[in-house]
Length: 301
Image 1 (cartoon, rainbow, N blue to C red):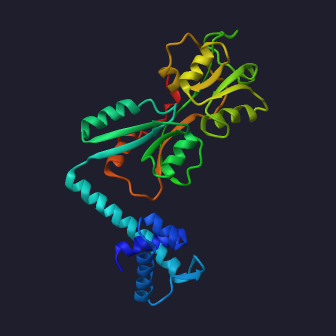
Image 2: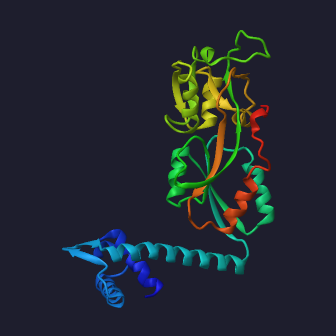
């Protein structure tokens, strides 16, 4: 049994129909059926139960399927590593970024480019939920997302954390060195980043709910530039991490620290769990990892 037959078998086991598997493999049905017969003859056991046009894996077939996945994955990994070792670090990296992503990325990419000039990038901006989906589907190699999100399907490294700030066009009647409470913030109409139940949006709402407060959310906005424009226009106030305020700090806004204990806004670099990761992706991860265990809790805007 060779690698080609194993890939044929994987397609059959996942499609459970000869026609669909043949279409997936871009081949006709008779040769595929013949290859299946050859595998079953070689192994001496039936791999599928035939039910009309549909197939059902037998117990031996399920065992072979699990081994076939491992074998083909290791072969793909070996081929990729051999190519990289023979050609040097090269290729294209697809990186996803959230609109509130880590501000170090541009400098890290510049450093990476100097070290590995044969690697190019495709950078895609999207919301955390979509970025996670694209990484899981292998449409992206890596993505920087805002936590919290479910990380069961990913390997990841946290990039640090930072406090949240209240930002508004109207000055508050408090001293310059004083902090604003969530009770005070709840009196304002808010424009909050991203969408309900995900990442930073979820984190912010949790801060209100744990204090028994119900914020007035006038709008949700996944584009941080547009969000800042809405705040500047007086449409509403917002709560943002310092990264965003430093990036879009040219506006005339009043920024206040928030009083009392609060969760920190955290970001993470994610990639598919237990999957082959190119040398280029590994090098980028190393560059993006925090250089110490300190979080950016005390960072200033």
